[in-house]
Image 1 (cartoon, one colour):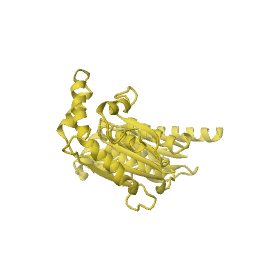
Image 2 (tube, chains in turn brown, purple):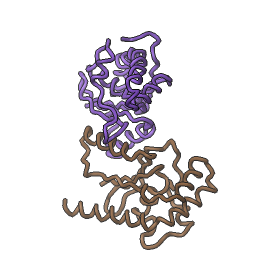
Image 3 (tube, chains in turn blue, brown):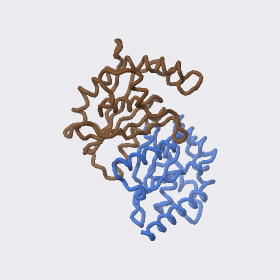
Image 4 (tube, one colour):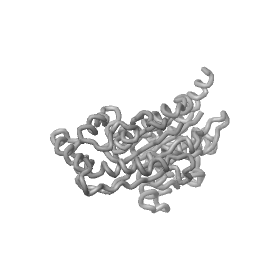
Length: 158
Length: 172
């Protein structure tokens, strides 16, 4: 199965969620500032021109492929495109899932992301977005756990 | 079987019109009414300004899919090929073309007015005027360029951008 975590820029919440899913970040505690700040790859590194680009982050223990994608403020467009393409190219709609991580983006992440990605002031913006990520980390872990649970259920049914 | 994916970042679905020329639903000499008759309904509740249509098959069996999303050009440009690649669709199975037009104030204004119901008639006229100028260029694009661009041995980047320039003479 393919899991696409998507958010506004595909640089912060979706990357963090993907890293949680891939066990690169802990699930039982909030990681320290440096741990989050230096998480690789792609945290606070994708540019505006990368919007819409699907990036493969790795494969989890169950053989699922994890991707991240940024889609600005157009989640519906992402859903429509993937749905239509799946129809035309006969891609099984159960073979992938889209997980919206924008709901876990707080104001600190927005402000920090804007300063870092749009204004290019990385030294100022990245610490703010990292701090914001720490504050919402538990909620992101819960969402990832939910996704993993859903996948296990689906696989058990099949 | 090859699939041709057309997209544009306009409110008016230019890619749909181009796709209709390719599939033969629109003739070389056309009237504005004919175009308005075939384009999908604007602003449905579900997808607002985004229009995504499977337009059927052309004479040579090529399937045509068109995407129009206002301000969604970059997302479509990056998402479509990378999503297909993620699902292991071979690059020679599809060809993506961006229908990119030179900026025209009246076309832009016409599209904006189309969204406002009291002024949609005026907007329609403005869009029609622009379409009349651009239609021959679209037909030429389909006739002259397309077949080489979607050929199997075409080796350039999979996402092609075609700049359509309006013809100063009226096309209809």
